[in-house]
Length: 616
Image (cartoon, rainbow, N blue to C red; front, top):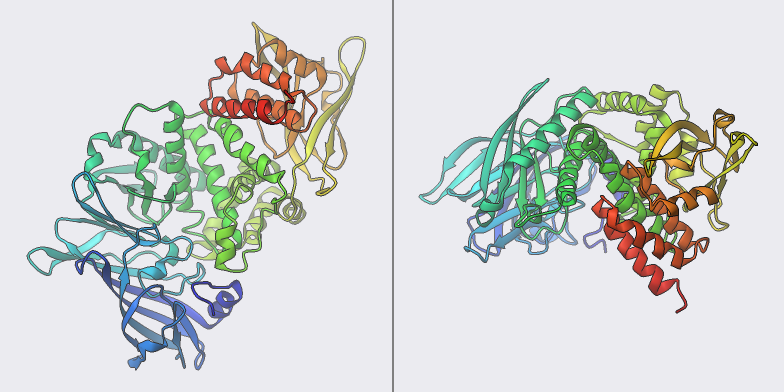
C-alpha cells in the first residue's frame, strides 16, 4: 500500500502518460477552525485510454468529476484518486474539504497568543501541495495556476501572483482572484492569509520594476526592520539580474515572515516565506544580520535556479540547494555589506560537512532518492554542506566567469522546464572547455574527504627548489579527486600575516608538482587551499604551524585564519596535534577572533578537545 509515498518509478511512468496544462484552485477559508474547502479543476493531456492517479492527502471528498462523468468518491484511498480511461484532453474536478495543519505541512493555521489574530501559510516542499488541493505531486509536471481564495475581508491574502480582482461574497468575506501564474511546479505554489502587516516598495533595475512586499504578523510590527530587509533584497536583484543577464521571471516579490515555521525559509515563486524569528526582537550580532541576508539571497537565487528551471526529480535536490548556498554567499560578498560571508561558510557549513563526511553514516552527495521517503531521509550535512562545498569547487574548476556564462545559457535554454545535473554540466562544459563527467563521478558519487599537504625543499638562499602538493585518502574511501586550489604565501608584517603571493593550480592524483613556486623565497607560512576553493582537509608544515602559534593566528583577513583554525582542528581530531596544544592555541587566539561563527565553533572544539581527546 503506497500510503503517502510516491516512487520515482511511479512518477516517471505518470510523466510519460500525462502533460499538465492548468489548475484552478478554489479555497474557502471561512468554513471553521479545523477544515477548509478545496475545489480543484485540473486540465491535462494524456495518452488516450491510459489510466493514472492524482494526489490528495487527508481530505474528505465531496465529488469527483472526470470529463463530465462522476467518479465514486469511495475510490479515493492511500492519498490517491484513480483516473481511468483518460482522453487526449481531460478536465478533472475534485471537491473536498481539507484539514488545517499544526505541523507546518500543507496549510498551517496559527492563532497569535498575543492578540488572538489568525495567520495561515502554506509549506509544500517536498510533497505537501496535495494536502491543500488535488495535484500531480511531482516537480516535472508543471502547469499554470489560478488561485481563488475566499477569506475574511479584513485579511491580507498573498499568493504567487498579484490579485486581479476582489469579489465581495458577504458582509464579512470576499474572494481574492489572483492573476494566472507563470508555469511552475506544484511545490513552489503558495498561499499566505491572515491579518498580516505589509510594507510595500519597488525595485527599479535594468529590466524594469519589481513590486516588493515585506510582511509579518501584527504583534511584530514594532520590530520589523523592513528597510534593511528591502536593502538586501534590492542588492540581490541588482546582482542576480546582472549576473544571469535575465529579468526576474515571476513579476512581483513578496517576503513573508510567518510563525511556527519548521523550515528556515522557502522559495515559493514570488511569495517567499521565512521563519519570523528573523524579525529580531532585541539587539543582534552582525552574524545574525549576515545570516538573515544570506537566507534572503539564498531564496532569491532559487527564483532562477529551482523555480524557473526545476529539477526533474528529487535526485537533484542537493544541486538545487547547493547552488543557492553558493549564490547566496557569492552575492553577499559581491553586493552587500557582508563581504566576509565566505568566512562564515568555512567556519559553519563546511566544518559541518567535514564532520558528517568522517562518520560511518557518510554517503555520496548524489543520493539515490528512489521515493519521497528517501528524499526526506537525505536532508543532512552531506546533501547540503558538502554539496555546497563541492559546487564551490566546481565554480573554481571551470572558472567563475565561465560558470556564469554556462548558467546564462542553461536558464535561457531550459526556462520554465525541468532538467537533470547533466543538462547543467553540458552548458558548463561548453562555456569552459573542461570535461566534467569524470569530475561529477569523482565528487558526487563517492564518499570521504581528501587531505592535502605541501611537500617542498629549499636551497641555501631560502628559495623553493621544489614544490608539490600531496593528496591522500583513507582506505575505506580511496578516491583521489581533481582539485582546483589556490596556494598562498604569507609573511608577517607588523605582527600580522599578509599574503605576498598567490597562485592557482590543478591538483590530480597522489602528487602534483607546482613549478610556478620554484625559485620563490619560502615565506613565514604556506597555505594550501587559500581562499577555500576546494573541499579537502589541509595540513600545515611544521614551520608554518609554528608561525601561527607564535603570532596567535593574527591575519589581516578572516578567511585564511578560518582555514588555519580548521587545519589545526583537523590535525587534532586525526591525532597529529596534541589536544593540549590545540586548546592553548584557541585560548591565545579566540579573544581577537572577529568572526562570531568562528568564536562559537572554536569554543565547541576546545571543549571537545578537553572532554574527548585528553586523558586527564
